[in-house]
Image 1 (cartoon, rainbow over the protein chains, first blue to last red):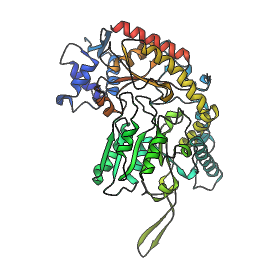
Image 2 (tube, rainbow over the protein chains, first blue to last red):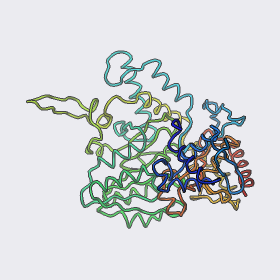
Image 3 (spheres, chains in turn yellow, brown):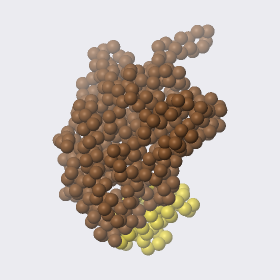
Image 4 (cartoon, chains in turn red, blue):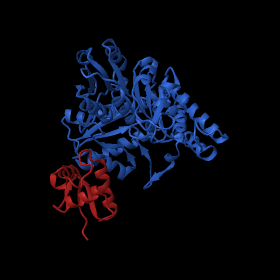
Length: 77
Length: 410
């Protein structure tokens, strides 16, 4: 994971804690103390979401759009 | 309606088979070929130091640099070229004033809850540094102000007022001339954050009579990393320097073991070190480009497009517009919340993924206003911003994508 940004690592660590999360849920969790060392944009969230989208492109996580918006989860490997 | 799309090479791009619909100009404007060519000319024809080297390339670089400042002076209708200082961006311009203006110990600073962080934080930090009072005027939920609040808050102890002329969230245009009059009557100076106003409306320093203005060139079709600080000569001459070094001095004497500088007046006083010549030349080209098209025409064009969006949004039960819907006091942007999705980032992601429609989401570096409105920055707001190169087809694609998003997320 060394090539991943801190925000991307944060997204992965958050998604490891549960099955799937909405965008707002991920951003809220990113503000918790346990992720504070990794998250560098957990208030506004724009670059955090960019990092999440890059993880989708790398095939590490998946996102699905439906009722309420996107849900994000780890990709099955 | 303006038809300038051919001037913008990037608009020829397609992404995933979709034409690019760029609605993020409030963050970064696209660049016309006139600006790109002007900067290329510097790098290809006379890539030398301005104001230093006496050779031919140096002379041409100096001339282009000087002409760029004059083009910008004309664009903002300032009295003198020397009142126009090149900076990296509006943020730097605001920081220069906040750090360098003389503020007596018993004086106070006034700002608003609607400021971009770049308009508030430099003054918050100055107040902290010197133990000064700073008072915040709250905007109304629609981004307008009660003029009585300005009259009450600005008093004869107020040294400077930092106010955003056009909000990057609500798009509301502040009554700057009234604010300036109130401030000047009480002996206070006014720093106007024109980052969003300058690219979209006719701007005249002589008319607004502000003491300082901050402009970001990248939002007005110019290059990144370029900004402008306008300041009335009397203030620029008396203010402390921000940086010192090469190009800020007429001479540096060495006498009895001491180094004694003799500093130049503005603009050189504030332009230490080797400058971004290509950037300044690009900034001049951008100012000239917009001025040639006419700022009244650009304002009218944007408002025509925005009116259609506001009308459609007002009729939709799932969309809440943040900011005024009065088109006469609004810059060409619309910030909104969609109640069928959990986060504004979902709106931006969906529009980008599905239709190559590019908008901004988040808190737009204006967290205090979001908190004031009870909107968590993590949920944020979505913002579509329009500029001279957008057209009705862009609006139609954007609106259709929005209806599809609402249906898919309901």
